[in-house]
Structure formats: C-alpha cells, structure tokens
Image (cartoon, rainbow, N blue to C red; front, side, top):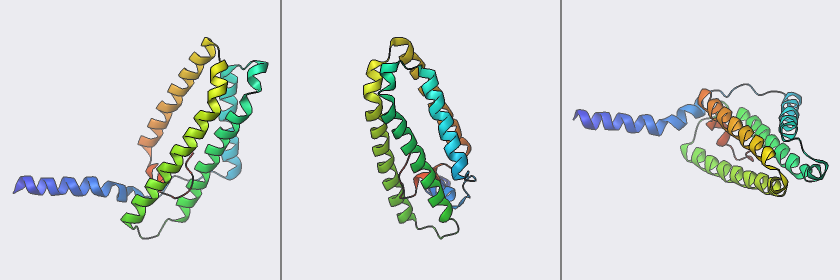
Length: 162
C-alpha cells in the first residue's frame, strides 16, 4: 500500500512538474532595444574572439545573420509567453506547443550550423580552439541559466526558438 501511494505521488510530481512551470511567472522581459544591445555585444564577443582574417570576414555575414535571427526568435517567444500569462493551462496544448517549439528550435539551430560551416572550414587551429572554448563556456552558461529559472516556459510557445 505504501509503495503504491509513493509511486502515485512520484508520478503526479513528475507529470505535474511541466504544468507547475507553466503556471509560474516568466522572468522579466528586457525591452527590444536592450535585447538588441545584448545581442550586439554577444555577436561582437564571438567575432573578436575569433580574430577573423580579411578573407574570413567575407564569410561572417551569414553567421551574424543566423545569430541575430535566433536571438530575435527567442525574444519573440518570450513576448508570446508573457502574453499568455493568466490563461488556464491545457496540458495537451502545452505538449503540442512544446513539440512545435522544439522542432522550430532544431530548424533554427541547423540554419546556424549551416551558416557556420563555410567559415569554420577556414579557421586556423588557434581560432578553432578559441571557438571550442567559447562554445563550451556558452553551453555551460545556458545550462546554469536553465537551472536557475523556468526557461521551459519559453519552449512551450508556438513561436520560433533561437
């Protein structure tokens, strides 16, 4: 009996965790201008870290465009989620929205990888190492950020994912 109660409570806890996140308030959304300034800074950091040659500079525009497109999609998603606050949560709609957001996020990430591919092929070993270090740092920061706030909410909209 005790095992079945514990099992049922565990199931409800795990199954309900996504719904609990959906009912929390998202973090405050920066203004469009501030978000753009942050994106500009991030683009500048990546470009400065790589120290591109004049030939490599010619391949930079599609990379920057893809980075900015992902950032804009993320901003649009945050705004859409904020607009849905206070609505009753439909679990099926929530799952479908999450699946759609993940598919769009995957497509955006593939576009970014496709934009990077030609430039990456021209990087020298030092530039590739700096890119790996930067990517490792960015991924670690994303994990820490995801752990410290309910970012899942931003995945559950039907807008593009950055």
